[in-house]
Image (cartoon, rainbow, N blue to C red; front, side, top):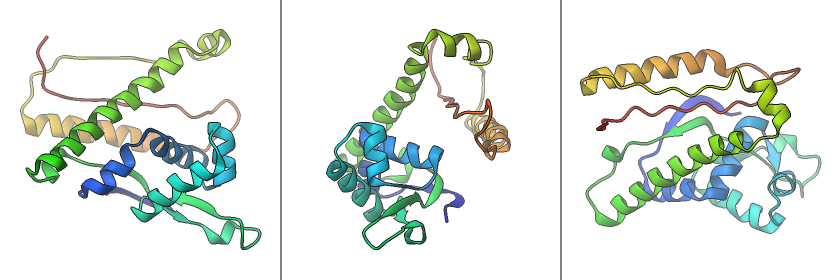
Length: 188
């Protein structure tokens, strides 16, 4: 069963595996839809079953997902599920090795691309969705003056709010909603 914990990634090989766009999408699909087979995920992504199976095995070897044999109807069917509800990492958890630094920077950039793509997909959503959800969907930004400790506290408070809403089951009008926030030092 999926742990309610957030896995802290400190191995650059795991981070590199996670940063692959299709692997990231597969993990998102398992997070939103629960356990699934390679064929179900292949159908949903438009990818070949063999390709999806390969990427699921890579994620499994990194301990990001695991097989769920109790869901299989026979010995040939393989179900996969997340090991933990989320992953996190910090560049400070990785050493000064140039190769590792390159992996971390690439993963951070790909992660931002993934987040931005989710919002861009909303902007391109059909008019019916835009009309139904338009007043609910939000975007916000704010310039604050904070110490590193205060910024960490803001992040913890935002996570607590999102955790409070996280456990709601899909159904009726309730559907998957992507929410993300960044708090980074910057210049206007």
